[in-house]
Image (cartoon, rainbow, N blue to C red; front, side):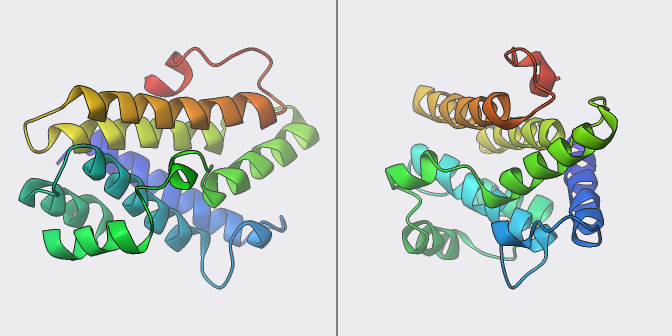
Length: 180
């Protein structure tokens, strides 16, 4: 198990819990569930997207999903989810997850009240997606160029959103802000 990845997931889940209990009205970005569960489901869909780039879902990928996201599913269930949630669509790969929208709003509220841009949930989110994606792609021992390009494209879409919408982002993110 990758400790950095597990710690990133845990940190984001704790941030979700804190935001659910804050005075910020972030529920408009999601409904009928906790932000933690929204994020957990979005992470699953992200992994389904990556797996769809590389062909059939493999056993190591299913094990990875179970180990890091606690989704107890097999390859067939993951394949069905990929179809059910329309992961192959252009809409999915071009849509910013609701949790990221909530994190950006929270970061902007913090920045407006204190101009403290040191700790940003949005940057932690970008780091999580980067590490999660890289580890997932390598879990079955085969990383294709299509998978690498798909990961980069998705991360670039998220980064562009952060650059556009984060009030504390005064210059383009060069990747180092979320890659390391």
